[in-house]
Image (cartoon, rainbow, N blue to C red):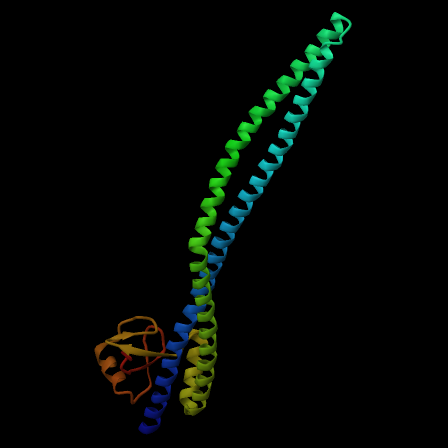
Length: 241
């Protein structure tokens, strides 16, 4: 009987080791995706900001081009009306031409003021484009490299997790019927692991302190002893360094 229990504890140690390794892989699977999402948001934010700045620049260019054309056409119209002044036959006709010329001059002044505003906006937008483009050039490759590293880590962790799950399933049939029944009952209750190793006097399943006498008994690895706090089966092995 003692040999059988000792053998079962040996298998339980294999199981808890695999549980611990699987827990490490699950941490990667939990941490990496949110970081990848954050990187995607950051890159997307930079690219959106660049696109919006470039679109704004195109908008300013189109408006300036339109106003330049209007100023040119209005200037030509002023020259035409000035020539027409020389052939006016009445004072009323002359005053009408002068009024039209003044209107066109005011229109040109307003357009030129707007052009100056646009030039200021274009310069500001040009600086924005340069700043964002520089940030993208400096940071995007680094972020993409980190993203790829995380993606690879996820793939590797998932593959290792699947392999560990399979290895753990291969160990379970080696347990005696009594021990396996106990193991499965505890696993159903705890949900993650039914076995915990003892480090010092601390159960690594719930981090509760185990009484010295029980801790001594656990270290012998010759009896099925459960943690009073979490009910996991306690085993003892030296942690790998």
